Image (tube, rainbow, N blue to C red):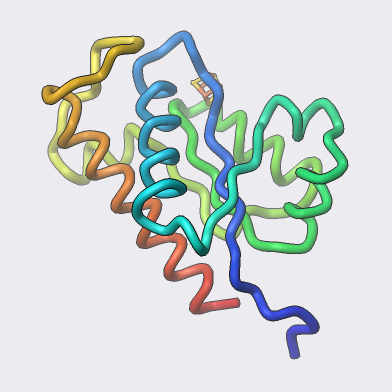
Length: 137
Ligand code: SF4
């Protein structure tokens, strides 16, 4: 039996600035946090989490997390697992784009209409993961 009723999921996005898929991670996560599941999600800042932010780590230790990584190095999933516990779901942007038959973005910033299908696909998969994690909790 769960001692706490889980009503929120921590979203941890990769902070990669060096590849467009890292930017895509952050924009898609923001869309979920602000527009798609605002009441059910909180953001966990990866750099602060790694630096030892008490609030971020204690949330991630008590509540489920979903990690979203921009490349196969999986920094976010690995850091989350090492510092608090296995993520409820780990998403990888290149895999999502491949499943949806979408090309990888080429811009590092200033995403616009061209990148909208990729942002939508990633945001929708994060939203689905949120719903699944909450249903399983
Ligand atoms: S997962 Fe890839 S893009 Fe994201 S922070 Fe790590 S190396 Fe950078």
